[in-house]
Length: 106
Image (cartoon, rainbow, N blue to C red):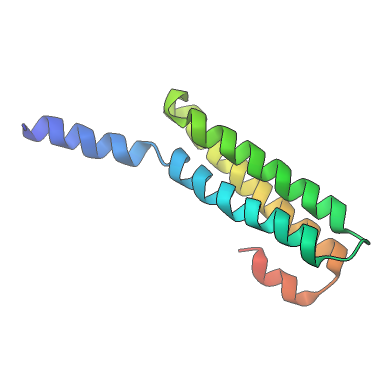
């Protein structure tokens, strides 16, 4: 394997982080949606279950289609996934009014 080919392979690996990030978010928010369903009170349960489920579905779709997305769009989708995660954390903080939820923000 030539040096040029190995450098291109390494470069390609670093340019496509969407699939592993989307996979991690999918599994995280799948677990969160089920735990919200089982553990939260009725007061804000369905809002958080819905928001976590939407994040899981979007992450699952991006995980499956990541190889067909250009690197510029992958960066945009990465930012979108991170914003969805932050939005979910902010919703949880807003509804629970618990200062302990601030640890989920960053």
